[in-house]
Length: 199
Image 1 (cartoon, rainbow, N blue to C red):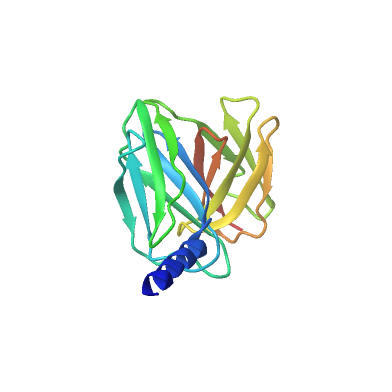
Image 2: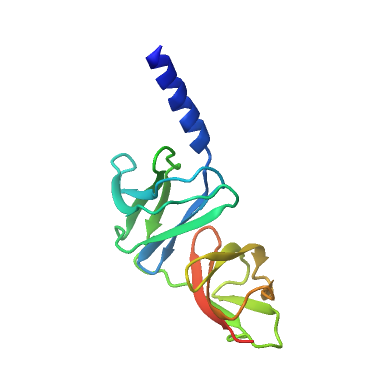
């Protein structure tokens, strides 16, 4: 009987944590790899681990975040940067919640040179502007998504289905004064820079 109760508890606990890690993506930034994922609302977890492998089989924990993660009423964006991936080789990553869920494996070939460029204007943003214009250099046609983070690293705005066919504009009138970091991806590269709002 105890074994049956224990097994039912295990099934229930794995169901509670199922599908908590959403939109797990990885991007190369210069010689580093940026990892980003969304933790869907629900039960809190006792931190998360980042696991890395060079053969997709033998994974090693390369980062431990012991802080309580997740809330019952809102999704939560998480990110971490691997500063020392293996260059000119496939690198494999997965995220582990404590306790429970393991994300699918993501892989990326880390090139020796990868320096995409992004320009934002106006920067700083003054009282006359409620929109931020984005220009990604070195490409004529590109679709991208991303996030804007405040100076404390908190996610404040999601950017979806933007295009570089013409300069893209993002409405930022709800953001207060301060320093912000914008991170965009076309699915292969990460474009990242900072901007300031001074109204």
